[in-house]
Length: 366
Ligand SMILES: [Zn+2]
Image (cartoon, rainbow, N blue to C red):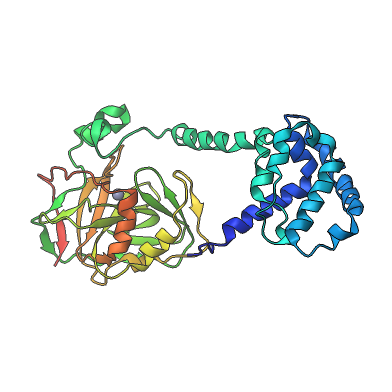
């Protein structure tokens, strides 16, 4: 991961300030004295007084060895040239430059930043507007507030919206505790996964990876295209009562819109390369779908042992739609404790409780 070296922040501040100075110290001083007058005239006139001031410097000052002295002399000259400061007693105090280090960094950030608040009102408003847009973006997409606990937790999902009624009334809901599967010779699943482009979104319920087209799996004579995969902690599905640290759901759709989800259980162990690639590309903000600049191969998420359980169930989040063929890989894969901790910091618990499996047929590879 590319982290900025510690020095870069002051450097960036310095550049910002240098830019500011280029825009004209005369303007800054004008702002400090309460002059709301706009920037352009001040900016245009700033360069000239500065040059004039430099010319007017006494030879002794120009030749001074101490850069701070040089600086003080230059600023004094500049202030003399820019009349704006004359009225503001505080302005003079602000322009103490005693602690400014090398001559090149002439600008003490504090000196020039302090008068700034009066000027940049429009710029300050911009981030706030963006933030509120991001917030309303989520709701404008029609996402309804539901959660994994509290008043809008799983027990309430079915009543939040009419479209969510299957969450309460459905009879083939997921996840389930997988027990007493019928061991038969299940056909092997044909995974046709390959290195692909992807984007990552933190959708407020999980971290989801949206896949570029080109990955599919075939089961029961149907070919399903991989749409996205996402994570749960702890695992939603259980096997003989056992819950795992996490699970991955690879969500597929066939051309008629039928869905098949492959569940892969994650336990603590060696690091998982795909998980790491996803974490490396986590967006900074929720609800932003951020395209990664690398590829990932979803087949690296699959265990080497491709035996599986399969049963008919539902989406495990609202609207809890049924008719989903579930394929749960029998062999878990590993993720490192650090990788699991990273997800836990975002979503400590995002698993729907197990649903009643009574009356459902579960087949398993033997
Ligand atoms: Zn899921």
